[in-house]
Length: 74
Image (cartoon, rainbow, N blue to C red; front, side):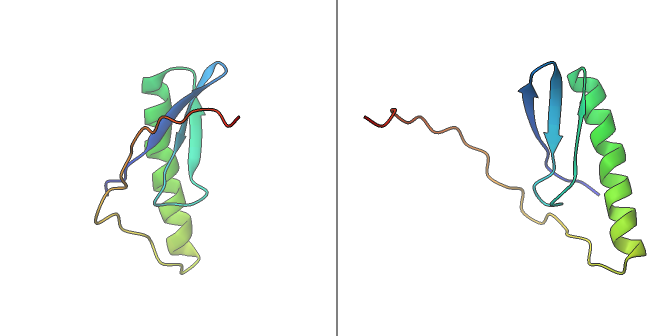
């Protein structure tokens, strides 16, 4: 399985979210650690969905990630 992850730097950790798997997130002290933990989190999340008889989302088309600039409201 392959899922897109979003990584952000928050305080002293890298936080990883999986948009296609709501509620699936993790963090780590380094980018490599966070991505390794993301792989484990995804595997566990999918296993739990299967155990519960819930559908497992498949990411056919990855989400679009973009940066948008905005001026502060006056």
